[in-house]
Amino acid sequence: MALSASKLVFFFLSLLINAISFVRGQSWCVARSDASNQALQTALDYACGSGADCNLLQSDGLCFLLNTIQAHASYAFNSYYQRRAMAPGSCDFAGTGTVAKTDPSYGSCIYPSSQTGSL
Image 1 (tube, one colour):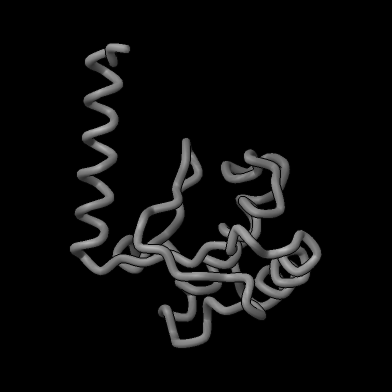
Image 2 (spheres, rainbow, N blue to C red):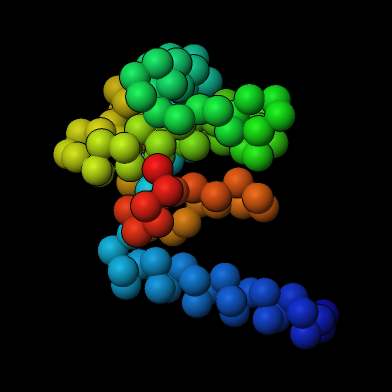
């Protein structure tokens, strides 16, 4: 099966962006894939109530879709983590969060990183 040139270019650009992010030491906090929905909801509520910027998770926000607890928790966890300057323990959320070296941004939902300054 042949890949179109545009798909190949997109693939290599995404690899390059992720490699640059890794080299620069950028990190993001995301929800663990094995966390229960109940635990994620509790942690999401905590993050949004404790300083995370959750405005983009509202129904008219750029990060509302994917409308899943996993996606919303990941965005909120990362906001909290970045606003606390990636302090030790700021990505735990009772064991539901984990630090990622790959940018979890998708579409027009951009996750702030330690290098972006747009927290």
